[in-house]
Amino acid sequence: MTLEKFIPERFCHALIFEVLAIGICAPLGAWLLGYPLAHMGALTLMVSLVAMVWNMLFNALFDRAQSRMGFQRNLAARAAHAVLFEVGLILAVVPLAAWWLGISLWHALVLDIGIALFFLPYTFAFNWLYDSLRARLVARKQAAAIAGVQHHTG
Image 1 (cartoon, rainbow, N blue to C red):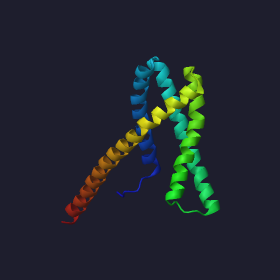
Image 2: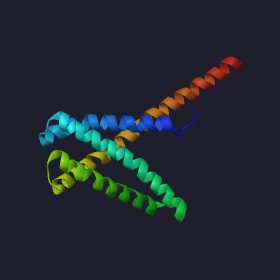
Image 3: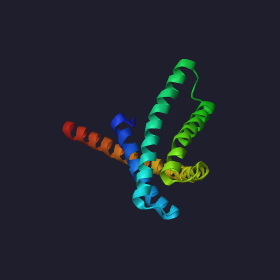
Image 4: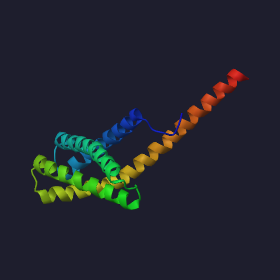
C-alpha cells in the first residue's frame, strides 16, 4: 500500500471531516446562538455542502487557470489560492446564513469569521490525527504484506 491517496479515500476523508464538523458545529452553534438544534443542524449541513461543492469547483478552476497561465504553485500562488477560496466561500455562505438565521449580512459575516476561527485549529487537528492514524494503518498493512510474503517463501 502506498502513501498516495486515491479518490475513494479522499471522499471518505472529506466525508468524515464534514460529518464530524457538523456534529460539533450544530450543537455548539445552537447553544451559543440560541437556535434550535435542528435549525442549526440544517444550516451547518447546507454550509458543509456549499463548502464541498465550492472546494471541487474552485480547485478545478484554479487547476485550469494554472494550466492556461503556466504559473508554479509557489508560496504566492498558494496564498492567492487560499485567499480566493475563502473569499468565494464567504460570498456564498454569508448570505445563506443571514437568510436562514434571519440576521443582517454584517452579523452573518461576524458569525462566519467565528466559524473560520474554529475551523483553523479543527482542520489542523483533524488532518494531523487522520494522517497519524493512516500512517499507522499503512505501516501495519505493509508489515502484514511483508510477513505474508516471507511466510510463503520461507
